[in-house]
Each structure stands twice: as C-alpha cells, then as structure tokens.
Length: 366
Image 1 (spheres, rainbow, N blue to C red):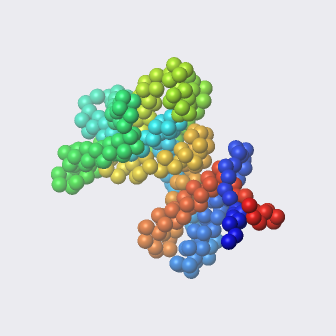
Image 2 (image 1 turned 60 degrees about the horizontal axis):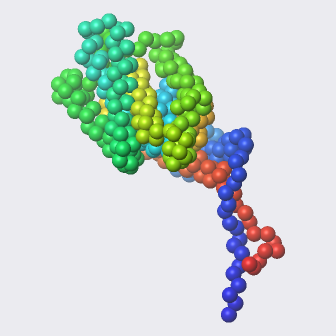
Image 3 (image 1 turned 90 degrees about the vertical axis):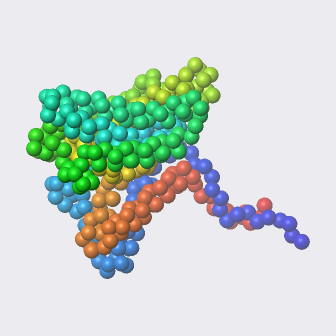
C-alpha cells in the first residue's frame, strides 16, 4: 500500500503588503470584471447591446445636472456615516448602529423644526438642530459603549438592537406629528416658512452638505493619524493588553470613540432632514449605516480612500437602478446587479491579501 502523499496542485499563502497602487489596480480590475458580468447578465435577460448597458450605468449618475448633484449628495451622506463608524472600527469595536444613530439625529432635528420652527430665529433654530442631533446620536452610541467598556458585552448585537429601537421610536413620533391626521407620514416640514432648512449655498441645495462632509473628511484624517486620541484608538485596536500596559484607559477610549461615532452619525441625520429631505421617515437612512461598513472596510479605514469607495458604491447602485428603469425590469434587478458588483469588489480583497502558489513541475510527491 502506497502511503505517499501527493503535493497539492496549489496552496494559498498570506501575501506581504502590496503598494497602494497595486491594491487599487486589483480593485479596478475587479470593478471592470463586475461591469462586464453585469452587462452579460443584462444582455441575456433583455437582449440589449452591452455598450448600451454601460451607457445607461453612466447616465444613471451623470445623465443630467440634477443627477450629478444627487450623486454628490448621496456620496457625501454615505461618506459622512463611513467617517463616523471608522474610529470605532479602527479600535476593533464593531459599531453596526449607524442607522439607529442617524435616525436619532433625524428625530432630534425634526423635533426642533416642528416644535420650535415658529418660536425662535432661524439661525438659533439651526444651531439647536446641530447640537441636539449630535447629542442624540452620541447618546444612542453611548448606551452600547458603556456596556462594552464595563461588562465587555457584544457591541455588534447591541448596536444592531439599538437600530430597531430607533426605527420604532421614529415610527411612534411620525404618528404623533403626522400631517394630515391619519396620513401616516409627516410630509415636508415647515414648507411654507422654510424654518430650520439649511441655507442654500451656490447653485444647489446639495452643495452645503458636500462642503461640510469634505471638511469633516480632512478633520477625521488628521484626527486619526496625527492626534493623541487617534494614536490611542490604534493601540487599543492592535491589542487591549498592550494599551493597558502603556497606561491607556481602554474603557475611556471605547466610550469616547463611540460618542464621536454617534455624534457624527447624528450630524448626518441633521444634514438629511434639515439640508435636503425636510421630512422624517423610518427609511430615511436607506441602510447607509450598513453600507458604510463596507465603505470603511474597503478603504482600509482611511478617510481619503473612503471618498473613492463611497463614490464607487453610489455610482454603481444608481447605474443598476437606471438599468432596471430603462429596460423595464423589476426594481430588484438593480439590487441584483449591485450584488454582482459588490461580490467582485469584496472578492478582490482576497487577491490583495493572499496569493495562490501552484505546484512546480518537479514537485509531484511529498
């Protein structure tokens, strides 16, 4: 009986750190393959020319000036939430409560607009909206942070549960504030007076949000890479034992970082309600809290690279929706194409972090 073992045809090994341009080249190739696959799937289902499919994807975001502004707004809000959760992720504290913390900020903003809109000057109302939305988001993140810091609870499950509580809380107040009664929705808040509406800067109401998030991106980059707090976050993320050894109070860092994440998520909620949507619904966040996880992870928790990943995901999502609309397909077809694209993008991370080694011609047996 032959007990010799044959050498495997190939084996997977950890790859050393690649230069940033090679990593992004791999991601770019993955996007190209994803687009080709999406075009093929669409062609099989619709019979349309793949070139027409790609043109439609482009037109979904750049087909008109309005579409371009909406693209910029969606990128800005997604980037804002991604910036919010990134400090916690760097600390290996998995804050999946971005949607709940945004909803808390949305609710606080709407409350200020509805209850104080005709009672105080507009500049003071906007200042109160800013403070209250950030406080609401921070408080919503503080609860799981305290339990994580003191009792080492699972922050992933805790923050997820807080999302559901926030959704039901918003649903409750929508019924209280609904206009007209029995409508089940609030409608446009202060439509006649514009009280609490953020001022328009330049040619579009979306520009102010884009500017605010651009400034926030620079601040977050400096905070994470050049501040004492950013250093402490990185040390805690690498090893809590090492952090304690060098004198860092881990519990304090966890609570402080989660407060920051929640506050910025609350700010994103204020930008939605006060800046562009001017209403409150349970679906106003559109799942950005979960998409932000992917944006942050794909960018390796780097705020600058998150600009690219946010743009990529929003661009592809809008392209998928445009294809479904133009070719008369179900709205779910856009989600299918988005899923294909995300599959390739996430799969590219495997080839960035690992390499496949094939058996050499002379290595037949071990």
